[in-house]
Image (cartoon, rainbow, N blue to C red):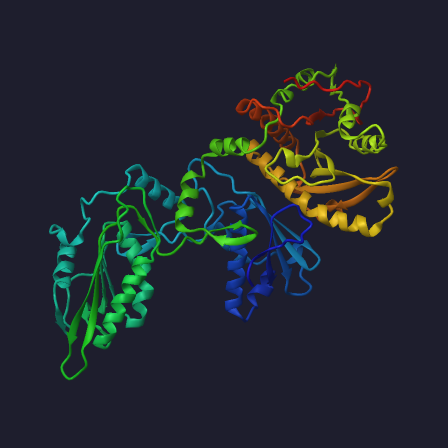
Length: 578
């Protein structure tokens, strides 16, 4: 039941497959294998968490139970109730859809804000003390905790840095007195209980290592404290745990190994290790084998100690990977810097003629050196074709017919989007068109120049379509995520790809993902989303010129079409300037 990246999907999305899952309230309640039920829930949450941290995408699951109906049965209350642990408002990010025997969860990318976490997390594994127990900090509280440590550049060794030096606290004094003892009598009493700086456990030797990570993390992140293992907190009697003396050497080594392996993060220059002292005291009982108390004193840590790596994932190199504590902290701290993220995205893109995209469509047309007619922008596809085809080739009319079939929408035409995004170019692709239309899916059209002798070779066309499918999926996904990041778009955006092969006298469809996939209604473009995407395109091209002065992409035209079809009255080539 591992989570894998679906490489063969027709969705222009990051798709994670979680295998089989039982769905529906009645079916999940009747599951006899409780372990499998918990595993399904964890996989479900892990996949959602991963996609939230990876720009959004789709969770794909095969429905295990027959005769399931999402409309009738729902998904199961335990799955629904688990979501608020990572999402306060799940409906803003998640949409569900059943397609025959498969169930899809559409996940919108996590939107950052100045106060909230930078990424989503199932468990932070960062602990602190609350009165008399160790508590795991929630993601929002963890961000506050980390920011306070960062602002102070760690903590000095003042105030409770070493619990043993405090004589004004009665509990700490009692702990210190007990810690300084070498042996005890069986059932000897002690006069303190669990507190902020004290923890007592009556547990077998083999369980000691299990309780260490959370306890050490909580004491180190608070003001230090003592852990006594072998004490009965209910009766306040010293019992001890059974062990051979030779076992204690191995146990002490394992304790050291466990503590040294705890993930830490530093904001200070000293970057010290976790400071602790471990000792074993004998417990004597007449006529019985000696038992032992394990006493551990943990000093407060300068920065932050985790009990384990945070339970938070992302996709990297087509694999689902867990964040390290260091990377997780960096993402949490740097996440809300949205404007910085936009500048980074823009700076990585090659340079485009920024003057071609002002907010006013008429100004856009004038800046490109093209005539202006009120209410629409008239461009010159013939001029573009002149750049793409030699005089001997007869593909112009095919391309013009394809462009003319796209009605009343925004088209962004570029020689190849791969030249304007940090992607590898593909030979044979001559033109890309991004189609933005209200009440439709965002669509990337690709046009491939073909030869007359291959237009009827079905095997060749099928293989070419399969080859270009992956290329256009990557191009479209990168383009979509770039535009969403630049625009700050809060809407849900679905995207499809269409690849057309321009033969000598006909256009052949190589691939059309829209015929193979379905999106929830909310993923079709709204008027606001269209406006956001158009603004992102303008800012993308403008910003590149502001950052760079060299013009690399010479074939970008932006056609804002407000009539029912392209108007080719004017045949003037764009003048980019420079």
